[in-house]
Each structure stands twice: as structure tokens, then as C-alpha cells.
Length: 139
Image (cartoon, rainbow, N blue to C red; front, side, top):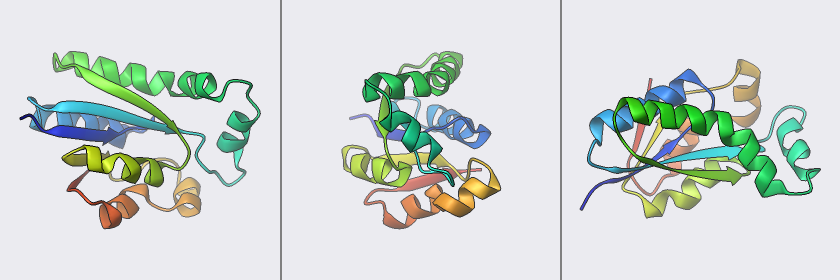
């Protein structure tokens, strides 16, 4: 049975490093990239923008498209196939809600600006502390 790997990915360099790590170390694994959109910000911009859309799922997919395109390009470098998933909401909850379906979570050590990290907290730290499965945090 192959290892099922959940990689949380946003538009940060650390998230791309996490995907590269997963593809290198779990080359025979089933890798799924999870991108969360509409996350809280100091002005609630992301969540508010999505809430005003007529089709929230389509708007979320549009927002996630650049991240997922980059994920597929990285996977091509490794001659690998990945699954992708888009979730609307808070990244920690989205990752933890899906964790039981996987064998390991891989995520970058941090992302976003200092202000975003102060407001939303460190996603990696929260997932690491609360996850029911092993977590690999990549720097």
C-alpha cells in the first residue's frame, strides 16, 4: 500500500518546498495538494470577497488556480501525478478535517507576511500540535 500524503500549499516559497519534499521522499506515494482560500486576514478581505460571489466554489477555484498550476508544474519536474483539492475556510481546520484520510501531512514552516502570521497564528504550529497523524514541517 502506498503512503497517502496531504500537502498543504499556498503561494509561498515554503509551501513549494513542502511539495518538493513530499515528491522526493514519498515518490511512490499518493500526493494530494490542499489549497485553502478565503482565509481570515486583518481586514477579513479573503473571506468577505468570497462571501459576495454568486458561485463561491467557482470563485474559490479561480483564486486557487495559480497555486494549483504551480503545484502541477512542480509535479511535472518529478514526473509525478498529484491530486488537488480546494477548500474555503480556515487552513488549520481544513487540514485537520482531512488528516484522518492520509498517512502524513507535509507543510511549509511558515507563509505570508509577519502581519498575517500574527493575526492568523502559525498554521504549521497549530497543525503540528493537533494533528492525529504525523506531520512533517519543511523549512
